[in-house]
Length: 161
Image 1: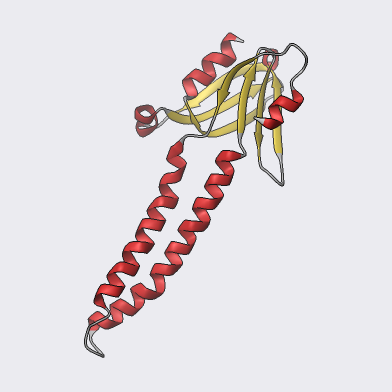
Image 2: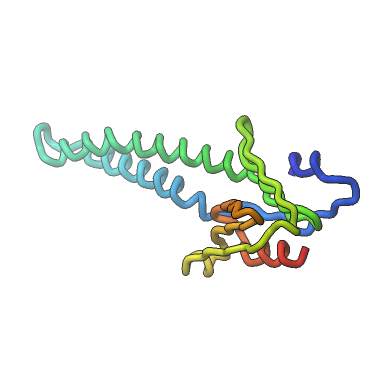
């Protein structure tokens, strides 16, 4: 919460600290698992007789397995960076949202300028307590906060502030 601490006004109290839900790690982990599984299958089929269909399939898996694994590792690193550099904070006066490390994108909206808070949750989102939150401010400004953990608690904290 380093960015938020630097911009808090004197006497401004933090009501709620939100974060990105851990479900965002699912896709990278599935890619990594798929890449490792493809490499494992390719290595187990590598002893096939020369010219057989099994050897051809093994070669294809051995080519695509590392590519899938590489995409999974890159996606995982990107997701970790996104989660670590995203800050969602509700104070008694403002909603503060910051994402990014080198290139920073910030949004600050006064609580009294917020017209509505829209929470969009899928069935899985309801079961695992995550969802997308759209904050609508006066003048039709809309800010999208995607895959937020505890979106209902975030909405309640904005409405009660």
